[in-house]
Every structure is written in C-alpha cells, then in structure tokens.
Amino acid sequence: MAATWLGEFDDLSSTAAAEMATMDKSGTSVFEPGKHAVEDIEVDANDAAPAPPVPVLIVAPKDAGTYPVVMLLHGFLLRNHYYQHLLRHVASHGYITVAPQFSVSNSLLPPLGDGEDIAAAARVADWLPGGLPSVLPDGVDPELPRLALAGHSRGGHTAFALALGYGDTRLEVSFSALIGLDPVAGAGRNAQLPPEILTYEPSSFDTLTAGMPVLVVGTGLGEEGKGGLLPACAPAEVGRAEFYRKCRPPCYHVVARDYGHLDLLDDDAPALITGLVCESGDGPRDAMRRCVAGIMVAFLNAALGAEDGDLQAIVRDPAVSPAVLDPVDHRLQ
Image 1 (cartoon, one colour):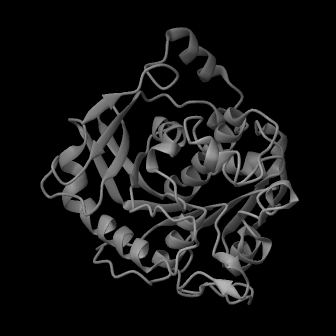
Image 2 (image 1 turned 90 degrees about the horizontal axis):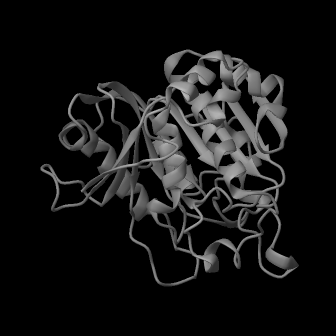
Image 3 (image 1 turned 90 degrees about the vertical axis):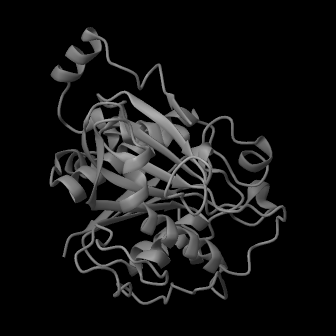
C-alpha cells in the first residue's frame, strides 16, 4: 500500500542541505524539492477503515509532524498518478497531498455534467477527518483546519464548484485556500459544464468563504487548438482568465506562457492524451512541473502559513521561475 519515494525527494545529503541553507531566499527555493523525504500511499476500499469513497493517492512527508493538507482533483480522462511528480514536490515542502481517483469514462465525448465528480470530491473531503490519519506514517498527522483544494482542467471546475457550495459536504472546517490549474468549465461560453459557475460578471464568486485566497495557474498554449485543427483544451471563454476574473481578492493569476494544458503531467502519461489532443510546448516538461509545483508551494505557504516571501518574490520577479511566466497578475483588495 505504501512506497517510499527515493531520489530527488529522499533525504537530503549534507552538501545539498548546506546549499539550501545558503540559498538566496528570493523565492527560487520553492522550485526545487523541499527538505522532506516523502512516501506514496495508495488507498482503496480494501486498505483502510473507514474506507475512502473512491481510491486515493496520498503523498506525505516521512518526518514526524503535523502538516497542512492539499486535495488535488484530476482532469477529464486523466489518472491521479499522472500528477505524482507534482504531488511529491508539494509534499516535500511540508504538505500532505491527497489525490482522489474519479471514474474515467472510455468515451472521448465531453461529459454531460460535473455532478458525479463534485459529489465524489465532497465524500472524500468528509472522509479526511476520520480516514486520513489512519493511513499516514507513524507520527505524521494532518492539520485539517489548514485544508486547501486544488484541481486541474475539468478538475479545476470541480474544485471551484465544490468550494462554491455545490457539493454536499459535512466538513466541520472549510477549505482555507483554492487553486485552479488551467481550469476549464466546458467547451465554450454557451456550452458550459453543469453546474454553470461562470457568470461573466467580475468578482462574482461571492459564495466562496470570505477572504479565501485563490490561485489560478494557466498555460499560454492551452487556449490554442492542436495543429489548428482540434478545439483548444482550455478555451479562453471558459478557461483560466475567466476563472480569475470571477475571483474576489486576494487572488493571483500566473501563466506559463510557453507550455500547454497537459505539460504539467508526468512523463508516463499516455502520449495519446498529452501529445495528440492538446497543444504542447517545446521546452522540457520538468521545468513546467517544477514551475507549477513551486508556485503552488509559494501560494500555500502564504495562504496557509502566513509566509508570503516566496510568493511576493515570484510576483515581483517572475524570472525566478524555471518557466517563463507572462502574465503575472494579482488583486489584494
């Protein structure tokens, strides 16, 4: 059920630790693996009591301690383990990451609605207080009052819908931060995925918890159709810019200019999905993954830990990122 991730996320050597200790605190350190070795934990109905409502992939620090929790929702036709590098990077900086696996249809046709995944995500959130502690390494505890919700692609729509109150969750604590990774709300303005959460009015996400920080990470190539023939994987009318416009402060919007909608996935994601469906960038995908994961860590540090130095550094000088960020916007009030 559990596996320890070795290599770049395992225990740091004394040399590496010394280098990190002397590293400029301008924010670039978030783009490199953190100080914690991490452990992969796959849990399904046969592995735990209480059992999760759907299979979940958990990546947690091995070091004893209490850590905030980040729940990441995958995109359409995708698998949670395609995000393993992203999950490990965030976890290595002192977070417990939880990625549910929703049912995946064999059809390439757009889904009729997002209600099933929203309901499943709500059930996973309800499982966390009683179920998550039972599957974590000894001495590792979740700090659920500091709980963030994230989602990629259609999973971004799922995450925003759940945070907006469309899911029936019995959580005693609310989500403290929200992240959309190139979120997509349908095929176009007149073809939104139910529930239709984009109203095309600025700052209209008014049912989010007051003051909840929101981060929207986009891609420059996500709005382009593959080869000029296929529809865009993240159409502008229902994509990252519209999600950002609907957010109330404090909110952030950063775009990896030269990368595509699926370039944040692991290299073992099927080429049929990553290379033939969506436009992809020419740069190394490792740089994109470190870019997205690092921005997530910087944002989470600010939103959940009140340590905003890394996030301020990225906003002030986007060139610290391993991938070009343009534009970089934020609204604080």
